[in-house]
Image (cartoon, rainbow, N blue to C red; front, side, top):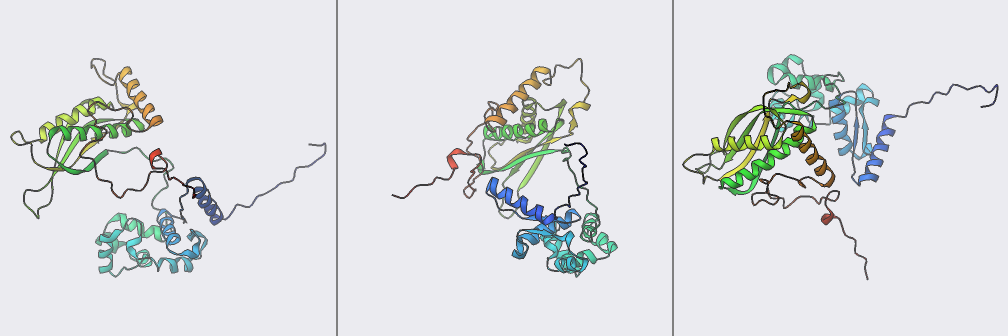
Length: 330
């Protein structure tokens, strides 16, 4: 800078939100090949509704900014959206709203709060306030830790063998333990769920659950799988083990941050330094080389009961054998 040269104040006007939204769409499409739409609004519910409008109406060109509209223009847009398409409403609740004469998102936003609370719930009352532009759902920049972790799957075939149930529970527990360690929490109990086919046609499936308390809070896959085995033994009938099961799952309960759990000087725990280092090493290897690279011996990599995925989309970004192949003519 030369002597005597003065620095002029320069104020840059912020870009319109719609312009930023278009840049987001372009970058996601260029980097991933996935077309997306962007919804902008003063509240979470209005932003979700704006995204719905951007998908449905081509006039928005993939980006809908409800905050840039006047109040009359915003209400005109709300009048075009059925109440069942509002975030958190759904088809079942929309039928109850129709019985109250609330057909559209605009009707829901104008409905008296006392009526919504009395006929539905406080949650829907907050949704109605959000449609009016009043913030009721805070934006979470960091997702809070889960209070419980569930992992369950329906079987591709009917399962009658206890060994296959053990394989399934071991796989589900291993996956849940990875999530548990990822958020740096420990579980105090584990629940085992089994769903079996009804004995008589027309009856709903029967689901039973058994909760097993852990000796101490843990995130060690070995300890959790052992607890799942104990829960399975309590659930299975002692005289009959050939009943057809259609689904199984586990739930990790009593989650506590690992930093807040006091250590026991007299317990021989798997949560020792060696156990924590082992679990950390397994997680690092699986993150680098793919899930399931290292597992417990009780986990079957190709089980017979695996869920059927005949109509699954190709996994272009994670599987080499599913990459699209271009063949030149001639």
